[in-house]
Length: 517
Ligand SMILES: [Zn+2]
Image (cartoon, helix red, strand yellow):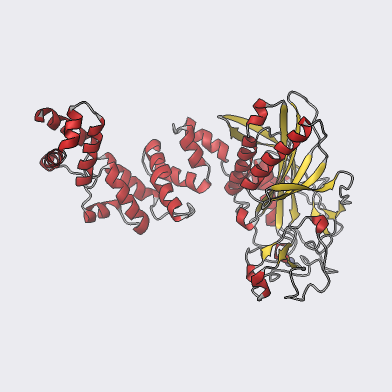
């Protein structure tokens, strides 16, 4: 993927629009619930169904969330910002227009720092604006025909191919009809329009990661891609390396996961390069990505470009965001991931790697800081949090949330290891039990007999037995094969159930092996 940059004469120019559903409880312009997974059309009202005479009311919390995001990417806030009607016809859009922002969006001219290839890069943000989501078209499958609406799966036909059928309610008449679910109609959507500053697939990947991380940190979207809450549109062109002018830009819609974006862009880079190398011209157009076929197809050309005839929404007054509101919003901003990462490295002395993992998720970073706050060295805390804690969370597929092992309990365990009351190895077993039961480490150590062997005689006995029982490896060691020592240490650890201090075992073994010769 990076080959294109180095091995060819073309430079990719890419930008992403991120569409994030905001985590508000009600919709953008009405009081309907935004809960995901409800029965189709159960969360609708005259406003989000676009019935005549209904009037939109702006969701204050959605604006708050949008404002937080716009400030976090250092946008200038536009006040008053204006909601406009974006006019087009499509069956998932009951009003035949979508309320969006164009001329006066919530925020303009921001930036977001990404980390790529060991360095930092600042990516421009053209604007951040609010709009409402559309409904969802559904394609019936076999189970739907038997009447189970919950197993509807989404249909994403190319818009130009969509034909509204008559008699769509005639179930069982075949596959030639579609259903529509308006539960999503009117869900608040935040659009972050990135500048075409991305030059490689790695940068695109780092950018998506940074945006998602930021939205989660801000608590404004849960970013669940499997629920369609984070979606992307990409624009991409190639130009001769070193050129300033942009090549013909292709926009791609319908990208619903990181993997899809990356695959699609790799594919499109190749396609455009082939066209250019063959002496052709890349058409300026919008394409649709078909994930199943792993291919894109033209949707409309520049000539057919839709004119959305934006005009101010007459039912909503311009939205004034005064200084007080701005100040309040600034105060709600947490320390952002990049700043936290830097602080972990510079002030707590963590490696870039550890800091990257820990600061990447707000709850994990909070847990780590609480552990350090409970009185343990940052490095030791980082080892346990990135090691055992994450391992157990991942095994269970659990979010960080509030793990059963509290930071205080983890600190107790680390201190027991540092005091030599339990070996690092046995402590892992103790941690596993703590993770299940949430009990105190001392209790588990006593109950399971996991305390570190303090009795020199007991340890010597174990070493002697292992030497006696393993003549082969002992002979190997004496013949100069040093790796045999590791095996013997392992046998002693096994015999003592990890309760022996590895360093002490090592020294004892060396002494015994020297005596035995
Ligand atoms: Zn509604």
